[in-house]
Length: 416
Ligand SMILES: O=c1ccn([C@@H]2O[C@H](COP(=O)(O)OP(=O)(O)O[C@H]3O[C@H](CO)[C@@H](O)[C@H](O)[C@H]3O)[C@@H](O)[C@H]2O)c(=O)[nH]1
Ligand SMILES: [Mn+2]
Image (cartoon, rainbow, N blue to C red; front, side, top):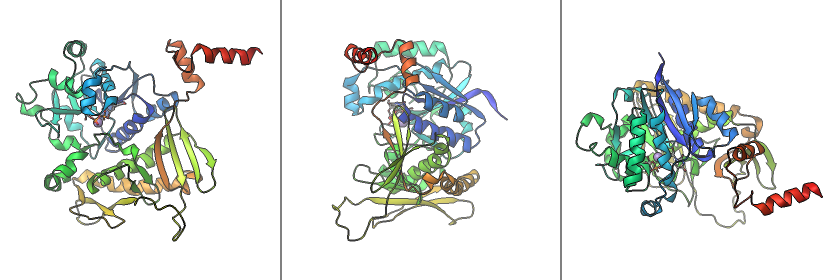
């Protein structure tokens, strides 16, 4: 039975975070949520990406970006880019819903979590870095213009102690830590990937019940590379991660390759001498499929840093349980590396992994021969439609491409 006055809500202020939002939305659909799916986006999100979002989300809502403009606190947090997370506050304006669950675009559900709607505002899980604070990546709230305005006023008067929404919301809902234990979501509803290796015994004990994974921190799933044929997440010198984390990353990429890639437009094909590449291009992001030749033994190549590769595959270790075993392909010390995902509906996860592989290989013939999949930030090169929209909305880039000298050059080229 579908519930139309409640929704899961996420946020993406650009095409890159949209990749995460799409995987989150798809994971909620895979686990048959009965609630609506809504996404807040800012004007930067390209029109191509908006139409992809519409195929996963029930509602795509454009809002203005809100920034904390607090470079000092953000520098302490070492995340200068997170001021824009104040945009999250717009979720309180969705008053056509009576209750919502906000989820960061870097989260992923592992099973149906509709029971979250039984909780009241403001419910959230502890932050693994400072457990008397909640993490603002997953929270239950009631849309209300009154609360929205109070939050804006509070932000204006007090700012945020970390420069992002999490500091602000913790100060605003400051009785969360002590007042009502029902508003403390269990940690399994917001399992931060870092906690996986900071407290391994607890992860081994409770991790099997994880319901939501949160890839918080600087490195997001889309910063890794993925091998479509082996279904392995590839690690190189620029990325790091524990074996557990790599299992969750592989799950993210499985959903991405099976369900999101097919929604994207047909890629452009590019031939190169050693590798064949094809690209899906949006304004802010390039998704590259690359056919990589296997390394030739004894070749005279520069020695590369060892690239550690892991794979995730279902085993039949236990009848009710599906166990994803992360296995290093190269010799890497492996301790307690099983990620257990229990619950009966978890078997759909297994089906999904099988489907993923089949669907991934059913992709067009270009994809078929491809092994490496990666997502890159693209230097902005807006298309004509987005450009027109920006002009119509009065958002010209006077200092950059819309500077007088550039416009004059175009006029000159047109006139002479
Ligand atoms: O450029 C950006 C940055 C963030 N977001 C959105 O804001 C969320 C939060 O940013 P994220 O990079 O996920 O932050 P975290 O690494 O999770 O860091 C923590 O700190 C943030 C700032 O306080 C909080 O928003 C997070 O919930 C908290 O987990 C993202 O998931 C997106 O939904 C964007 O759309 N564009
Ligand atoms: Mn996050």
